Image (cartoon, rainbow over all chains, first blue to last red; front, side, top):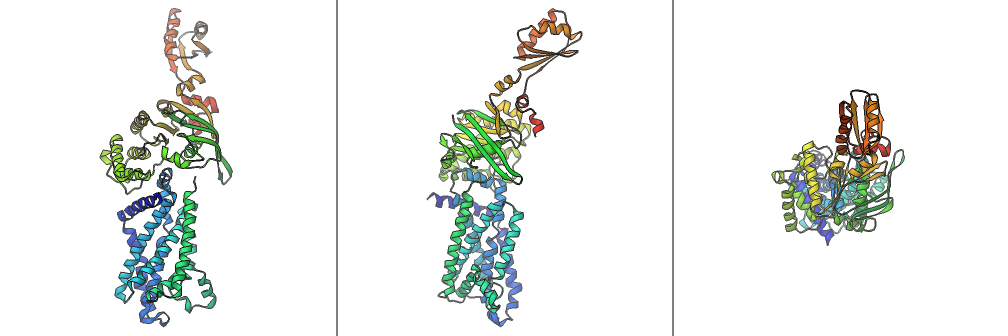
Length: 250
Length: 315
Protein backbone atom coordinates (compact mmCIF):
# COMPACT_ATOMS: atom_id res chain seq x y z
CA UNK A 1 0.00 0.00 0.00
CA UNK A 2 2.60 2.51 1.05
CA UNK A 3 4.81 1.20 -1.77
CA UNK A 4 2.15 2.09 -4.34
CA UNK A 5 1.52 5.47 -2.75
CA UNK A 6 5.22 6.29 -2.42
CA UNK A 7 5.97 5.16 -5.97
CA UNK A 8 3.20 7.43 -7.20
CA UNK A 9 4.60 10.35 -5.17
CA UNK A 10 8.09 9.86 -6.57
CA UNK A 11 6.71 9.39 -10.09
CA UNK A 12 4.62 12.57 -9.96
CA UNK A 13 7.59 14.62 -8.78
CA UNK A 14 9.81 13.15 -11.50
CA UNK A 15 7.17 13.84 -14.16
CA UNK A 16 6.86 17.41 -12.90
CA UNK A 17 10.58 17.84 -13.43
CA UNK A 18 10.35 16.38 -16.96
CA UNK A 19 7.42 18.62 -17.89
CA UNK A 20 9.25 21.71 -16.61
CA UNK A 21 12.13 20.91 -18.91
CA UNK A 22 10.51 19.01 -21.81
CA UNK A 23 13.29 19.80 -24.25
CA UNK A 24 15.04 16.52 -23.32
CA UNK A 25 12.05 14.48 -24.41
CA UNK A 26 12.38 16.05 -27.87
CA UNK A 27 16.16 15.71 -27.90
CA UNK A 28 15.72 12.00 -27.17
CA UNK A 29 13.57 11.69 -30.29
CA UNK A 30 16.11 13.40 -32.53
CA UNK A 31 18.42 10.42 -32.98
CA UNK A 32 15.78 7.94 -34.20
CA UNK A 33 14.35 10.68 -36.41
CA UNK A 34 17.73 11.15 -38.06
CA UNK A 35 17.89 7.41 -38.66
CA UNK A 36 14.38 7.47 -40.07
CA UNK A 37 15.12 10.33 -42.45
CA UNK A 38 18.76 9.77 -43.34
CA UNK A 39 19.30 6.01 -42.98
CA UNK A 40 15.88 4.61 -43.88
CA UNK A 41 16.10 5.61 -47.57
CA UNK A 42 19.31 3.56 -47.90
CA UNK A 43 17.46 0.42 -46.85
CA UNK A 44 14.91 0.89 -49.58
CA UNK A 45 17.46 -0.29 -52.11
CA UNK A 46 18.21 -3.52 -50.25
CA UNK A 47 16.01 -6.49 -51.15
CA UNK A 48 17.07 -8.34 -47.95
CA UNK A 49 15.13 -5.87 -45.84
CA UNK A 50 12.04 -5.78 -47.93
CA UNK A 51 12.98 -3.10 -50.47
CA UNK A 52 10.05 -0.72 -50.68
CA UNK A 53 8.72 -2.05 -47.38
CA UNK A 54 11.96 -1.17 -45.61
CA UNK A 55 10.20 1.00 -43.03
CA UNK A 56 8.09 -1.94 -41.93
CA UNK A 57 11.40 -3.61 -41.11
CA UNK A 58 13.30 -0.60 -39.87
CA UNK A 59 10.86 1.29 -37.62
CA UNK A 60 10.40 -1.60 -35.12
CA UNK A 61 14.19 -1.71 -34.76
CA UNK A 62 14.29 2.05 -34.28
CA UNK A 63 11.73 1.75 -31.48
CA UNK A 64 13.89 -0.79 -29.68
CA UNK A 65 16.91 1.41 -30.25
CA UNK A 66 15.03 4.37 -28.82
CA UNK A 67 14.08 2.24 -25.83
CA UNK A 68 17.69 1.20 -25.29
CA UNK A 69 19.34 4.57 -25.64
CA UNK A 70 16.51 6.49 -24.07
CA UNK A 71 16.81 4.61 -20.79
CA UNK A 72 20.36 3.31 -20.54
CA UNK A 73 21.64 6.77 -19.64
CA UNK A 74 19.07 7.76 -17.01
CA UNK A 75 21.68 7.02 -14.33
CA UNK A 76 23.29 10.37 -15.11
CA UNK A 77 20.27 12.21 -13.74
CA UNK A 78 20.48 10.10 -10.59
CA UNK A 79 24.14 11.00 -10.10
CA UNK A 80 23.15 14.65 -10.33
CA UNK A 81 20.46 14.06 -7.71
CA UNK A 82 22.94 12.25 -5.48
CA UNK A 83 25.30 15.17 -5.74
CA UNK A 84 22.55 17.70 -5.11
CA UNK A 85 21.60 15.96 -1.86
CA UNK A 86 18.08 15.14 -3.02
CA UNK A 87 18.54 11.41 -2.59
CA UNK A 88 19.99 11.85 0.87
CA UNK A 89 17.03 13.98 1.85
CA UNK A 90 14.69 11.20 0.67
CA UNK A 91 16.68 8.53 2.49
CA UNK A 92 16.16 10.16 5.86
CA UNK A 93 12.40 10.00 5.40
CA UNK A 94 10.51 6.73 5.88
CA UNK A 95 9.69 6.65 2.16
CA UNK A 96 9.92 3.17 0.63
CA UNK A 97 13.37 2.58 -0.89
CA UNK A 98 11.87 0.51 -3.68
CA UNK A 99 9.53 3.42 -4.46
CA UNK A 100 12.50 5.72 -5.03
CA UNK A 101 13.54 3.37 -7.82
CA UNK A 102 10.14 2.39 -9.19
CA UNK A 103 8.89 5.99 -9.31
CA UNK A 104 11.89 6.94 -11.42
CA UNK A 105 11.65 3.89 -13.67
CA UNK A 106 7.96 4.57 -14.15
CA UNK A 107 8.83 8.09 -15.28
CA UNK A 108 11.33 6.62 -17.75
CA UNK A 109 8.72 4.17 -19.05
CA UNK A 110 6.06 6.85 -19.54
CA UNK A 111 8.48 9.16 -21.27
CA UNK A 112 9.63 6.37 -23.55
CA UNK A 113 6.12 5.25 -24.44
CA UNK A 114 5.31 8.82 -25.43
CA UNK A 115 8.43 8.99 -27.58
CA UNK A 116 7.68 5.61 -29.19
CA UNK A 117 4.16 6.63 -30.11
CA UNK A 118 5.52 9.88 -31.55
CA UNK A 119 8.03 7.92 -33.61
CA UNK A 120 5.34 5.59 -34.99
CA UNK A 121 3.11 8.54 -35.86
CA UNK A 122 5.97 10.28 -37.64
CA UNK A 123 6.77 7.09 -39.57
CA UNK A 124 3.18 6.61 -40.79
CA UNK A 125 3.64 9.04 -43.73
CA UNK A 126 6.55 6.86 -44.88
CA UNK A 127 4.17 3.97 -45.41
CA UNK A 128 4.36 2.23 -42.02
CA UNK A 129 1.26 0.25 -41.05
CA UNK A 130 0.46 -1.52 -37.80
CA UNK A 131 -2.61 -2.87 -35.97
CA UNK A 132 -3.41 -1.09 -32.73
CA UNK A 133 -3.43 -4.37 -30.74
CA UNK A 134 -0.02 -5.34 -32.13
CA UNK A 135 1.30 -1.88 -31.41
CA UNK A 136 0.13 -2.15 -27.79
CA UNK A 137 1.98 -5.43 -27.40
CA UNK A 138 5.08 -3.85 -28.93
CA UNK A 139 4.76 -0.98 -26.45
CA UNK A 140 4.64 -3.56 -23.65
CA UNK A 141 8.01 -4.84 -24.87
CA UNK A 142 9.29 -1.28 -24.93
CA UNK A 143 8.12 -0.77 -21.34
CA UNK A 144 9.94 -3.92 -20.22
CA UNK A 145 13.14 -2.76 -21.93
CA UNK A 146 12.76 0.62 -20.23
CA UNK A 147 12.36 -0.98 -16.81
CA UNK A 148 15.27 -3.35 -17.41
CA UNK A 149 17.74 -0.76 -18.64
CA UNK A 150 16.75 2.10 -16.35
CA UNK A 151 17.19 -0.24 -13.38
CA UNK A 152 20.62 -1.30 -14.66
CA UNK A 153 21.55 2.32 -15.23
CA UNK A 154 20.41 3.39 -11.74
CA UNK A 155 22.18 0.48 -10.07
CA UNK A 156 25.42 1.29 -11.88
CA UNK A 157 25.04 4.99 -11.08
CA UNK A 158 24.65 4.16 -7.39
CA UNK A 159 27.73 1.98 -7.52
CA UNK A 160 29.99 4.29 -9.51
CA UNK A 161 28.69 7.69 -8.39
CA UNK A 162 30.57 9.47 -11.11
CA UNK A 163 29.64 10.46 -14.64
CA UNK A 164 33.23 9.94 -15.67
CA UNK A 165 33.05 6.28 -14.75
CA UNK A 166 29.50 5.65 -15.93
CA UNK A 167 29.83 7.07 -19.44
CA UNK A 168 32.62 4.83 -20.76
CA UNK A 169 31.08 1.76 -19.15
CA UNK A 170 27.67 2.35 -20.76
CA UNK A 171 29.24 3.11 -24.11
CA UNK A 172 31.37 -0.02 -23.97
CA UNK A 173 28.28 -2.16 -23.31
CA UNK A 174 25.69 -0.42 -25.44
CA UNK A 175 27.61 -0.42 -28.75
CA UNK A 176 28.03 -4.21 -29.17
CA UNK A 177 24.51 -4.77 -27.87
CA UNK A 178 23.21 -2.38 -30.52
CA UNK A 179 25.24 -3.93 -33.32
CA UNK A 180 24.27 -7.46 -32.30
CA UNK A 181 20.57 -6.67 -32.07
CA UNK A 182 19.87 -6.54 -35.80
CA UNK A 183 18.41 -3.07 -35.53
CA UNK A 184 20.26 -1.56 -38.46
CA UNK A 185 20.45 -4.63 -40.68
CA UNK A 186 18.91 -8.08 -40.16
CA UNK A 187 21.15 -10.60 -38.41
CA UNK A 188 19.93 -13.17 -40.93
CA UNK A 189 22.23 -11.76 -43.62
CA UNK A 190 25.26 -12.19 -41.34
CA UNK A 191 27.62 -15.17 -40.99
CA UNK A 192 26.68 -18.05 -38.71
CA UNK A 193 29.01 -17.13 -35.80
CA UNK A 194 27.58 -13.62 -35.63
CA UNK A 195 24.05 -15.01 -35.60
CA UNK A 196 25.01 -17.36 -32.76
CA UNK A 197 26.33 -14.50 -30.63
CA UNK A 198 23.22 -12.44 -31.40
CA UNK A 199 21.06 -15.26 -30.04
CA UNK A 200 22.50 -14.40 -26.61
CA UNK A 201 21.51 -10.79 -26.95
CA UNK A 202 18.07 -10.27 -25.40
CA UNK A 203 17.57 -7.15 -27.47
CA UNK A 204 17.95 -9.11 -30.65
CA UNK A 205 14.93 -11.11 -29.46
CA UNK A 206 13.11 -7.89 -28.70
CA UNK A 207 13.83 -6.59 -32.20
CA UNK A 208 12.62 -9.80 -33.83
CA UNK A 209 9.48 -9.77 -31.70
CA UNK A 210 8.71 -6.14 -32.47
CA UNK A 211 9.19 -6.80 -36.19
CA UNK A 212 6.83 -9.75 -36.01
CA UNK A 213 4.23 -7.55 -34.33
CA UNK A 214 4.56 -4.81 -36.93
CA UNK A 215 4.24 -7.51 -39.59
CA UNK A 216 0.87 -8.43 -38.06
CA UNK A 217 2.09 -11.75 -36.68
CA UNK A 218 1.54 -11.63 -32.90
CA UNK A 219 1.48 -15.45 -32.74
CA UNK A 220 5.14 -15.62 -33.78
CA UNK A 221 7.33 -17.59 -31.34
CA UNK A 222 9.71 -14.67 -31.04
CA UNK A 223 6.97 -12.57 -29.42
CA UNK A 224 6.28 -14.70 -26.38
CA UNK A 225 9.93 -15.66 -26.05
CA UNK A 226 10.95 -12.00 -25.99
CA UNK A 227 8.21 -11.21 -23.47
CA UNK A 228 9.44 -13.93 -21.13
CA UNK A 229 13.14 -13.11 -21.53
CA UNK A 230 12.59 -9.40 -20.93
CA UNK A 231 10.22 -9.94 -18.00
CA UNK A 232 12.76 -12.13 -16.22
CA UNK A 233 15.64 -9.77 -16.93
CA UNK A 234 13.62 -6.72 -15.88
CA UNK A 235 12.66 -8.41 -12.61
CA UNK A 236 16.29 -9.32 -11.92
CA UNK A 237 17.67 -5.89 -12.68
CA UNK A 238 14.91 -4.14 -10.72
CA UNK A 239 15.73 -6.33 -7.71
CA UNK A 240 19.40 -5.55 -8.04
CA UNK A 241 18.79 -1.81 -8.31
CA UNK A 242 16.30 -1.84 -5.44
CA UNK A 243 18.87 -3.50 -3.21
CA UNK A 244 21.45 -0.89 -4.17
CA UNK A 245 18.92 1.78 -3.27
CA UNK A 246 18.14 0.24 0.07
CA UNK A 247 21.73 -0.22 1.11
CA UNK A 248 23.08 2.56 3.22
CA UNK A 249 25.67 4.66 1.51
CA UNK A 250 28.53 6.88 2.49
CA UNK B 1 18.28 11.05 27.52
CA UNK B 2 16.93 11.62 24.05
CA UNK B 3 20.14 10.49 22.34
CA UNK B 4 22.52 8.03 23.90
CA UNK B 5 25.47 6.37 22.22
CA UNK B 6 28.04 3.95 23.47
CA UNK B 7 31.22 3.07 21.65
CA UNK B 8 29.92 4.25 18.28
CA UNK B 9 32.45 3.44 15.57
CA UNK B 10 32.77 3.80 11.83
CA UNK B 11 35.64 3.33 9.46
CA UNK B 12 35.90 3.72 5.72
CA UNK B 13 38.02 1.95 3.22
CA UNK B 14 40.16 4.49 1.44
CA UNK B 15 42.87 4.17 -1.16
CA UNK B 16 45.54 4.07 1.54
CA UNK B 17 44.06 1.50 3.88
CA UNK B 18 41.29 2.01 6.39
CA UNK B 19 40.34 5.38 7.80
CA UNK B 20 38.83 5.24 11.26
CA UNK B 21 36.47 8.21 11.07
CA UNK B 22 34.70 7.66 14.38
CA UNK B 23 36.51 5.74 17.09
CA UNK B 24 34.22 4.99 19.98
CA UNK B 25 31.91 7.91 20.67
CA UNK B 26 29.92 8.02 23.92
CA UNK B 27 27.28 10.72 24.07
CA UNK B 28 24.21 11.57 26.08
CA UNK B 29 21.97 14.38 24.88
CA UNK B 30 19.12 15.57 27.08
CA UNK B 31 15.70 16.37 25.79
CA UNK B 32 15.20 19.99 24.77
CA UNK B 33 18.81 21.08 24.58
CA UNK B 34 20.84 22.53 21.76
CA UNK B 35 23.76 20.18 21.60
CA UNK B 36 26.80 21.21 19.61
CA UNK B 37 29.38 19.00 18.02
CA UNK B 38 32.54 21.06 17.60
CA UNK B 39 35.64 19.97 15.78
CA UNK B 40 37.85 20.61 12.78
CA UNK B 41 36.93 19.30 9.34
CA UNK B 42 37.48 15.57 9.13
CA UNK B 43 37.19 15.07 12.89
CA UNK B 44 34.21 12.74 12.51
CA UNK B 45 31.37 15.18 13.16
CA UNK B 46 29.39 14.56 10.02
CA UNK B 47 30.03 10.81 10.10
CA UNK B 48 28.63 10.62 13.64
CA UNK B 49 25.67 12.76 12.65
CA UNK B 50 24.95 10.63 9.60
CA UNK B 51 25.05 7.47 11.70
CA UNK B 52 22.58 8.94 14.18
CA UNK B 53 20.35 10.04 11.28
CA UNK B 54 20.26 6.44 9.89
CA UNK B 55 22.25 7.37 6.77
CA UNK B 56 25.27 5.29 7.74
CA UNK B 57 25.30 1.95 9.49
CA UNK B 58 27.75 1.98 12.43
CA UNK B 59 30.52 -0.63 12.45
CA UNK B 60 30.22 -0.99 16.19
CA UNK B 61 28.63 0.38 19.32
CA UNK B 62 25.04 1.08 20.25
CA UNK B 63 22.78 4.09 20.06
CA UNK B 64 19.25 5.03 20.95
CA UNK B 65 17.74 8.04 19.24
CA UNK B 66 14.40 9.48 20.40
CA UNK B 67 13.81 6.37 22.45
CA UNK B 68 14.41 3.92 19.59
CA UNK B 69 17.31 1.55 19.06
CA UNK B 70 19.13 2.94 16.05
CA UNK B 71 20.50 -0.34 14.74
CA UNK B 72 17.46 -2.48 15.38
CA UNK B 73 14.80 -0.08 14.14
CA UNK B 74 16.16 2.65 11.87
CA UNK B 75 12.75 2.98 10.20
CA UNK B 76 11.14 4.15 13.42
CA UNK B 77 14.07 6.48 14.12
CA UNK B 78 13.44 8.13 10.74
CA UNK B 79 9.88 8.90 11.70
CA UNK B 80 11.01 10.69 14.85
CA UNK B 81 13.96 12.71 13.62
CA UNK B 82 14.65 15.42 11.11
CA UNK B 83 17.96 15.79 9.33
CA UNK B 84 19.31 18.73 7.37
CA UNK B 85 22.44 18.03 5.38
CA UNK B 86 25.10 20.66 4.98
CA UNK B 87 24.35 21.21 1.32
CA UNK B 88 20.60 20.89 1.65
CA UNK B 89 18.80 18.91 -1.02
CA UNK B 90 16.22 20.64 -3.13
CA UNK B 91 15.48 20.38 -6.84
CA UNK B 92 16.26 23.51 -8.82
CA UNK B 93 13.05 23.64 -10.82
CA UNK B 94 10.65 23.25 -7.93
CA UNK B 95 9.28 25.92 -5.61
CA UNK B 96 9.86 25.96 -1.86
CA UNK B 97 6.16 25.42 -1.24
CA UNK B 98 6.08 22.38 -3.54
CA UNK B 99 9.09 20.94 -1.76
CA UNK B 100 7.50 21.46 1.65
CA UNK B 101 4.27 19.76 0.59
CA UNK B 102 6.20 16.92 -1.02
CA UNK B 103 8.33 16.43 2.07
CA UNK B 104 5.19 16.23 4.24
CA UNK B 105 3.78 13.66 1.83
CA UNK B 106 6.96 11.57 2.06
CA UNK B 107 6.35 11.39 5.81
CA UNK B 108 2.90 9.99 5.12
CA UNK B 109 0.76 13.12 5.50
CA UNK B 110 -2.36 13.51 3.41
CA UNK B 111 -2.53 16.18 0.70
CA UNK B 112 -4.56 18.69 2.69
CA UNK B 113 -2.53 18.32 5.84
CA UNK B 114 0.77 18.55 3.98
CA UNK B 115 -0.39 21.76 2.32
CA UNK B 116 -1.46 23.17 5.65
CA UNK B 117 1.86 22.30 7.30
CA UNK B 118 3.73 23.83 4.35
CA UNK B 119 1.78 27.07 4.73
CA UNK B 120 2.51 27.15 8.46
CA UNK B 121 6.22 26.51 7.86
CA UNK B 122 6.37 29.27 5.24
CA UNK B 123 4.96 31.67 7.81
CA UNK B 124 7.13 30.49 10.70
CA UNK B 125 10.37 30.61 8.72
CA UNK B 126 9.44 33.87 6.99
CA UNK B 127 9.60 32.38 3.53
CA UNK B 128 6.46 34.09 2.22
CA UNK B 129 8.32 36.41 -0.17
CA UNK B 130 9.97 33.64 -2.14
CA UNK B 131 7.98 30.50 -1.28
CA UNK B 132 6.56 30.26 -4.79
CA UNK B 133 9.81 30.82 -6.62
CA UNK B 134 12.04 28.03 -7.90
CA UNK B 135 14.69 26.88 -5.42
CA UNK B 136 17.54 27.67 -7.80
CA UNK B 137 16.86 31.40 -7.37
CA UNK B 138 17.42 31.44 -3.60
CA UNK B 139 20.28 33.09 -1.76
CA UNK B 140 22.38 31.00 0.61
CA UNK B 141 20.46 32.15 3.67
CA UNK B 142 17.06 31.64 2.04
CA UNK B 143 18.03 28.17 0.90
CA UNK B 144 19.19 27.21 4.36
CA UNK B 145 15.92 28.32 5.90
CA UNK B 146 14.01 26.25 3.37
CA UNK B 147 16.25 23.26 4.14
CA UNK B 148 15.49 23.50 7.84
CA UNK B 149 11.78 24.00 7.24
CA UNK B 150 11.90 20.80 5.14
CA UNK B 151 13.74 18.96 7.90
CA UNK B 152 11.06 19.61 10.52
CA UNK B 153 7.84 19.50 8.47
CA UNK B 154 6.85 16.26 10.24
CA UNK B 155 7.47 17.75 13.70
CA UNK B 156 10.30 15.49 14.80
CA UNK B 157 11.46 15.22 18.41
CA UNK B 158 15.11 15.49 17.45
CA UNK B 159 16.52 17.51 14.59
CA UNK B 160 20.06 17.06 13.27
CA UNK B 161 21.65 20.04 11.56
CA UNK B 162 24.95 19.56 9.77
CA UNK B 163 26.89 22.82 9.77
CA UNK B 164 23.73 24.94 9.62
CA UNK B 165 25.52 28.27 9.22
CA UNK B 166 28.52 27.22 7.18
CA UNK B 167 29.15 29.75 4.44
CA UNK B 168 26.51 32.23 5.57
CA UNK B 169 27.14 35.94 6.01
CA UNK B 170 27.00 37.26 9.61
CA UNK B 171 23.44 38.53 9.27
CA UNK B 172 22.08 35.26 7.90
CA UNK B 173 24.01 33.44 10.60
CA UNK B 174 22.36 35.48 13.34
CA UNK B 175 19.01 34.82 11.72
CA UNK B 176 19.76 31.09 11.64
CA UNK B 177 20.67 31.11 15.34
CA UNK B 178 17.26 32.58 16.05
CA UNK B 179 15.62 29.80 14.03
CA UNK B 180 17.56 27.16 15.94
CA UNK B 181 16.51 28.65 19.26
CA UNK B 182 12.93 28.74 18.06
CA UNK B 183 13.07 25.01 17.28
CA UNK B 184 14.19 24.37 20.82
CA UNK B 185 11.43 26.64 22.16
CA UNK B 186 8.96 24.49 20.25
CA UNK B 187 10.18 21.49 22.20
CA UNK B 188 12.67 19.96 19.79
CA UNK B 189 16.09 18.74 20.74
CA UNK B 190 18.65 20.20 18.34
CA UNK B 191 21.87 18.36 17.57
CA UNK B 192 24.16 20.40 15.36
CA UNK B 193 27.71 20.26 14.11
CA UNK B 194 29.86 23.31 13.68
CA UNK B 195 33.45 24.29 13.28
CA UNK B 196 32.77 27.85 14.42
CA UNK B 197 33.89 28.43 18.00
CA UNK B 198 31.62 31.44 18.50
CA UNK B 199 28.66 29.43 17.31
CA UNK B 200 29.24 26.57 19.71
CA UNK B 201 29.77 29.09 22.49
CA UNK B 202 26.81 31.35 21.84
CA UNK B 203 24.21 28.92 20.59
CA UNK B 204 24.76 25.59 22.30
CA UNK B 205 23.67 24.53 25.77
CA UNK B 206 26.32 21.84 25.77
CA UNK B 207 29.22 21.17 23.49
CA UNK B 208 31.12 18.02 22.66
CA UNK B 209 34.55 18.61 21.20
CA UNK B 210 35.58 15.90 18.78
CA UNK B 211 39.01 15.32 17.33
CA UNK B 212 40.31 12.37 15.31
CA UNK B 213 37.04 10.51 15.80
CA UNK B 214 36.99 10.76 19.58
CA UNK B 215 35.33 13.08 22.03
CA UNK B 216 37.94 15.02 23.94
CA UNK B 217 35.63 17.21 26.04
CA UNK B 218 31.92 17.47 26.75
CA UNK B 219 30.16 20.06 28.92
CA UNK B 220 28.51 23.47 28.85
CA UNK B 221 30.68 26.06 27.09
CA UNK B 222 31.11 27.99 30.36
CA UNK B 223 32.19 24.92 32.29
CA UNK B 224 34.58 23.81 29.58
CA UNK B 225 36.25 27.21 29.60
CA UNK B 226 36.45 27.37 33.37
CA UNK B 227 38.13 23.98 33.52
CA UNK B 228 40.87 25.17 31.24
CA UNK B 229 42.24 28.12 33.13
CA UNK B 230 39.67 30.63 34.22
CA UNK B 231 40.16 34.21 33.08
CA UNK B 232 43.46 35.93 32.63
CA UNK B 233 43.96 39.56 33.72
CA UNK B 234 47.06 41.15 32.27
CA UNK B 235 48.28 44.15 34.25
CA UNK B 236 50.90 46.59 32.99
CA UNK B 237 52.58 48.91 35.52
CA UNK B 238 54.75 51.95 34.88
CA UNK B 239 57.28 51.14 37.57
CA UNK B 240 58.77 47.85 38.70
CA UNK B 241 56.49 44.92 38.29
CA UNK B 242 58.14 43.10 41.19
CA UNK B 243 56.53 45.33 43.79
CA UNK B 244 53.09 44.91 42.23
CA UNK B 245 53.59 41.17 42.10
CA UNK B 246 54.44 41.06 45.80
CA UNK B 247 51.19 42.85 46.56
CA UNK B 248 48.94 40.84 44.30
CA UNK B 249 50.33 37.36 44.76
CA UNK B 250 48.78 36.77 48.23
CA UNK B 251 45.32 38.03 47.19
CA UNK B 252 42.76 35.22 47.58
CA UNK B 253 41.23 35.72 44.12
CA UNK B 254 44.58 35.24 42.36
CA UNK B 255 45.05 31.59 41.50
CA UNK B 256 48.41 32.00 39.87
CA UNK B 257 50.67 34.85 38.86
CA UNK B 258 53.25 35.12 36.09
CA UNK B 259 55.60 38.08 35.88
CA UNK B 260 57.51 39.63 33.01
CA UNK B 261 59.58 42.83 33.18
CA UNK B 262 56.60 45.13 32.87
CA UNK B 263 53.55 42.87 32.84
CA UNK B 264 51.78 40.63 35.28
CA UNK B 265 49.51 37.85 34.22
CA UNK B 266 46.96 36.98 36.87
CA UNK B 267 44.95 33.76 36.54
CA UNK B 268 41.62 34.31 38.25
CA UNK B 269 38.27 32.58 38.42
CA UNK B 270 36.21 35.52 37.29
CA UNK B 271 37.92 38.45 35.61
CA UNK B 272 34.98 40.80 35.97
CA UNK B 273 35.13 40.80 39.77
CA UNK B 274 38.92 40.54 39.97
CA UNK B 275 39.63 43.73 38.02
CA UNK B 276 38.12 46.19 40.55
CA UNK B 277 40.02 44.44 43.33
CA UNK B 278 43.29 44.64 41.43
CA UNK B 279 42.72 48.33 40.82
CA UNK B 280 41.97 48.95 44.49
CA UNK B 281 45.02 47.04 45.71
CA UNK B 282 47.46 48.77 43.37
CA UNK B 283 45.87 52.18 43.94
CA UNK B 284 46.12 51.76 47.71
CA UNK B 285 49.86 51.11 47.39
CA UNK B 286 50.33 54.05 45.06
CA UNK B 287 51.44 51.94 42.10
CA UNK B 288 50.61 53.52 38.78
CA UNK B 289 48.79 51.36 36.30
CA UNK B 290 49.75 51.54 32.62
CA UNK B 291 47.22 49.08 31.23
CA UNK B 292 44.83 46.38 32.23
CA UNK B 293 43.39 43.73 29.96
CA UNK B 294 40.97 40.87 30.45
CA UNK B 295 41.26 37.72 28.44
CA UNK B 296 38.53 35.13 28.77
CA UNK B 297 39.37 31.70 27.50
CA UNK B 298 37.59 30.69 24.32
CA UNK B 299 36.61 27.21 23.28
CA UNK B 300 39.75 27.33 21.20
CA UNK B 301 41.75 27.41 24.46
CA UNK B 302 39.78 24.36 25.50
CA UNK B 303 40.58 22.69 22.22
CA UNK B 304 44.23 23.63 22.64
CA UNK B 305 44.33 22.25 26.16
CA UNK B 306 42.79 18.96 25.10
CA UNK B 307 44.47 18.33 21.77
CA UNK B 308 47.69 20.32 21.89
CA UNK B 309 46.81 22.47 18.90
CA UNK B 310 44.28 25.15 18.07
CA UNK B 311 41.14 24.58 16.08
CA UNK B 312 42.18 27.17 13.54
CA UNK B 313 45.47 25.49 12.77
CA UNK B 314 43.67 22.16 12.43
CA UNK B 315 41.55 23.46 9.56
